[in-house]
Image (cartoon, rainbow, N blue to C red; front, side, top):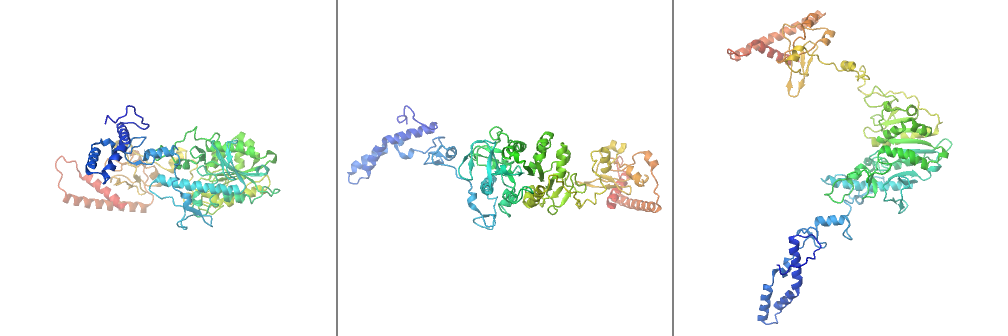
Length: 638
């Protein structure tokens, strides 16, 4: 081999002993290939003498094995691997994938996985259906690989978002990137691209001329313009499950009694606050995790606070502040003195209330607000600090929450409803949103009611006030809890009355831990409560007096010694025990005790017949046996 090895290696790939040997074989084969081909020609030429052909065969056989093409092994140029090599690129499968994703192989790019938008279409009912079977909606579970399912849902959501944005653009809205002033390039009439980190929002094109502006904040986990993907990709359709239906309805309203023009609209974007450089756009947290990565072995999506955050819009609270302090002044003409109506959904409603709940902020915006619709927000009234904002919520705001009641049913006043277990102390009148569980469906099912409230306020005078609503709603179990007042549950004295504790005598505490499953019964006997696989019971000795009377029962303590026997707390309580006033009650109690004792004596007699006599030194006694039998009787009696 040494005679073929080059004095200077001209290898431009990964170097190890295997690649050096393969390089030498390739050099030797290239050098002796003409000679081998000549000898093979002579051997196969039948017109030549047999001796000449035999000598050529002998020379070919005696040539070094490195001159044979079969000695050459295809190896990866980057790793030296000899198996699983793509011949066209001279790379292993892994290195080919990495180089292709990095863009180092001309003409090779990663295909979208999977091509979900090409598998579905939007039918005449505006619903997304499968092309293979038009009776089926979007199917999420395509594989046992969760990453594959997340990836195909990401592709589907991106395609639907693009369709929704086109429809919003057709309704007269423009997409504006935040922060304001971000450089953009417009490819066509609907697509606006930029390489700088930004958060897009939608604003009416003629908003500067409007006397009324509706500001809408969606949930923090939804894409811009999306209300509920369960409606967009299922029964209902694209318009119903998106802001398209809300915007179209708002454009049918009047700005004021004297202005018949439709109000201006601003669609804020509290969800897509994470900038993804590889995608060149901002994404929600869910979409950020499902976005394509360089390979399956790459580390998951980690949020870099400097690289993946947009200045001024790092969180929902910052985005709400930026919209009020930068977007509204930039697009709304102050000379118009436009009235602002706010609709906020879910956690965005809480962020809006926290921002407005300040003396300085409310002094700036209080005179510009027309009304506020809290859709699914749960900011408690006791957290409110600004008195002016509190009064505004009572007079010009309404809350809509999930409920089993019909749409627009009055559930509570501003201070809450004491006859319901649901949280209703929201500072404004509370209404049913028309859906039982999901906050994202409140605007889908009850959007018309919310918009009617906005129109009612807009067409009224500036001194609009919520009417006095009659609250007749109460939970089904409210009658059972009518006498229970939990308003002072933090008070220890009230807590002891609501949940009485079991007093333990000093003797019982000395014997060991008390089993909390033993409770006092109405007849003075302790009751056994099942705890796991054991049942703990207690009995009273025959010589103990019965403690009767409601007040004495309440004060009587229940104790248990190591054998489970319930004893008297103190000798003083024996003397203070009250004799039952009813002779009938006393007679029935004595008859019951007599019956139980007769039963115990018969069982003890049977036990003595079947059991050998205890030997000297045994600790077993008749008293202990009688106590055990007494326990059994109490269990049977209970």
